[in-house]
Length: 308
Image 1 (cartoon, rainbow, N blue to C red):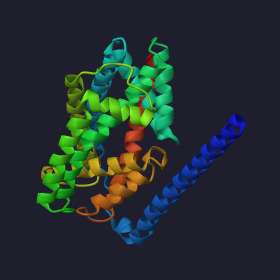
Image 2: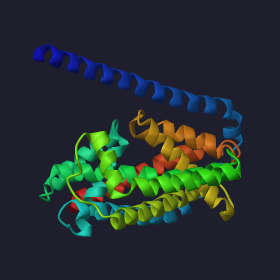
Image 3: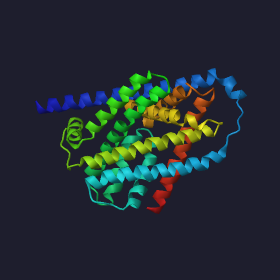
Image 4: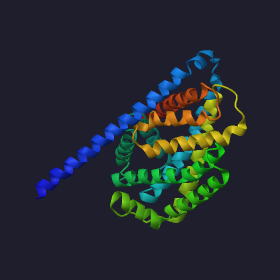
């Protein structure tokens, strides 16, 4: 009986993996295909576009990326300090930088977490602690993004202001509730079928929420600077562009099918930016964002790897 159950379980797991791969390939093909269609239908706009890229905006873009990295690692260190022994900030930033490169390959999130687990083992940090830290970080990122996404939908005129404000308030309340250690422990037990191995404090989880909310805003500024590579845009558009970044990022998080959001992120960015930017800017910005930030990841990752 036990042998039969084991074979059945393995078969079901294999089917789940197969369907996930099929869905991942379908999402990726659809996204890339649609982006290719956008290039085809806007080919005249591409040919007529004044290709004077303002490369000087790469400098503030890179500096802002460094600021974002420092703030992210501040949040990550705060999470890890609650789970295990305290490590120097420099150790965290090196590990975060070179494992972050792994997000850019297929199944990047899995490899990134695995890379963290391996790297922190070298610092005598239990694998369970670094894996749990990654889970908590993901939860905080998504929960803090939801209220911002509701406000972004208002800014893009996707929903009426009254509904958006109500949704933002509800999302903020739910996030504050979900970040309470008692409920967070229940969510963890629901997902991982085990208890949290540590006792968290509410003031710590609220600190994480504040830090990662700041990360969302900095990331939106990063997208704004990439838009400035291709043309002038008013500073008044910064909140709207930040909203575009939040919405497109959450779409990529929630699908979790396309590797590292490849295709999905670009598709959502193109569609959302197309609500207020002329062709061919939406697709150019979406592709440039992927290319530029990937290069930043690689450069900092290699520096961290060499100096570690």
